[in-house]
Image 1 (cartoon, rainbow, N blue to C red):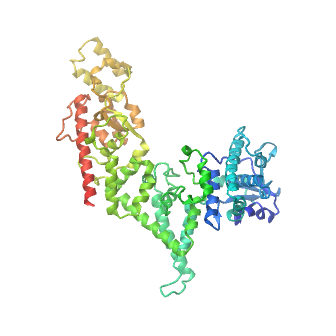
Image 2: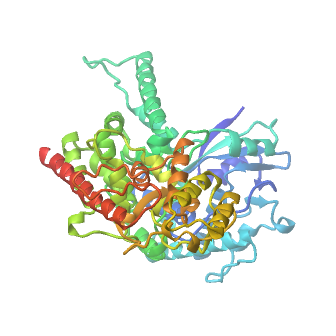
Image 3: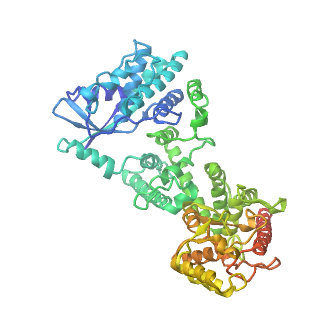
Length: 614
């Protein structure tokens, strides 16, 4: 059985211990070392300082950190099962506040004992008392992270002192920052509790806490005549909303759905479920356009602190702790607020689902999202609150800026515009409209497609023909008596091919056609990295056979690439491919080049028509 208590931070270091007759928290040897980073403004230590300062600046009454889990021992201590990173950081903060102003009590002094430190040395207290400006101690991993945390906290404390806010920050941190203390049953072994918490149990995530917050607030408490509704009626409202929330969460947690909207990193899954998907969706409900730091721009303390970090290292947001929950907790104070955010949740979900299930919107949005990953969230935030008519118009406009216009000039290998160009040929295959079929963007992104030269860029000096292709290459040599006359040299060449021996590429010159520009876009296609490596330096006949075999085995070969290697593109109105399926020569490059020009114009024309229709 677990007992849960909510304490302010000063209570965690005080009443939570004294009420049980305990003296401190003990961190056992099975716990990992201190690992909170301080390198950039989004790392855990600076983020904790920034979030608390922001809550203080906004006058938020209660600011919650993640819970800690403890187990009462017979040694007069609470064994800390989960939460050592948070308590250690808090202990360092109070130590450095006391170092800056001895009038501020260090309420955490002597309250943490670590088994992992040599001779049970209280390293946190030792580092907490070190002289200001000391060089970081990198002699061990623990000392590295702890001493860099102290250095970061000192810089923050200096800014507080310059603004006359030391005691205000100390008071807010002690009294207004709250922690839930989970107390494990004394019958449970500490190692078992640690394994359960870190391996099997479902954590109290931001999404879980926000769900509880919104469902609690999103209720009608009176009927139409203003009479109070009974408890059963209110609970029924919450049950209905809970089922709807679960429907929304289950949909977003489908790996492909999460990957499509929020990217590959967001779709990291547990047993096929993208467990972080709901938190990514919930961020879009927030009312700000610039979520990262814009809502904190009014705080001179935060601006000065963040400005002290290397701007090149401030690109990642770890979103540690319950930052997202705290933001919703600040926004949802009344039942009306709860109804507002539940309605927004439902409205945005319906919009996302309609965009995902309609091939036209899906393909256009996918091209924009995967063609411009850096602005993914900005795009979603922009589109989600608009009508479908406006979304379609803006997607069509955006797609035209992503897909290069070949009327302005052809592009070659190493030009970054080549990727969206080739991608567009796969997303919008010839013979159909933009909404004819849904392209699998998550699979495309997962497979890491790369440029593939149809005729190799730099053939190796020698190759060994794969077994599946040997008969085809030998048959070609038998039929090409002009280049491979009968005689011992040709016989030896065929024998070496049949046995899989290395053969010089100079012995099969007709299979490696000379091109005027091997990097011409007409010589380019897309293949996933593993397939690209597998076929990269072989002549066209070998590549074609290998790619067709990959398709037979269920490999996902891009439609445009498959059409190029089978010479099956619709070349009406263009130069034609040669009928020779063994060679890829200058005529074929020119034909493909001309087709790309024509197909690019067709796609852009259709996008322009969509834009003008809306």
